[in-house]
Length: 297
Image 1 (spheres, rainbow, N blue to C red):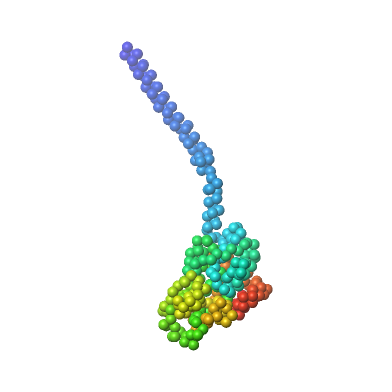
Image 2: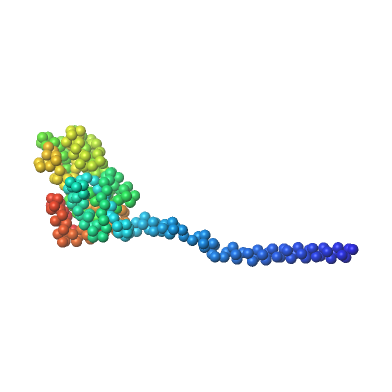
């Protein structure tokens, strides 16, 4: 009996050992199955959304603004209503020296041009947020602008000048005489920078044209606007015949601003040089009577 029990126990132990070894072998044979098809390739395959992500990232990277603009087929230009640079004709089309030059630049790139009115004080935010591709609106090349944008070469001379009612012109012929006046100036403009530097009282408005309206209405004593705009909109034969300009506060230059690092600035510089050389820039300037302000390219 004892011998029979011993034989039975030996059989049970042998079966247990075989089962134990079999479990280990099974685990070993199943392991390759877990690593087959390099970590579930099908599960990691790109979905349509994933496939689009690199293109979107490349588009947003700003590596080539020129390629980005040509890819979407549109150059979006940020502007304000600023005669003679950007303003609407009777049919509602944007015209002006800057508008016409922007259209010609777009044509040279093979893209359409879309004009978008912006809050001038938010121009850098609009540019960086890609709601616009450039700021082309008689923009003064200030240190702030040049540090925040990739700017073109200067293409026009300008100045900030004081606008007052024509019948008060003789009272305001120098900077010292301006201290008691209240000014209207475009928010974020070179005009605002000038009155701030002179510690003059002012009210910020949306556009330079609004500053003129303030003076004409008598809600502000004076305005500070660009000399090129004043020449087109103030004085005899204009919509503001009762206003005039007096003190020139500075001298400055216009440029076009793109996103920092944008290769569109270099492309525009080449376009400016070519259009100046072939006379088309001067011809465009003559249309809007700003030829005296154009800078040789």
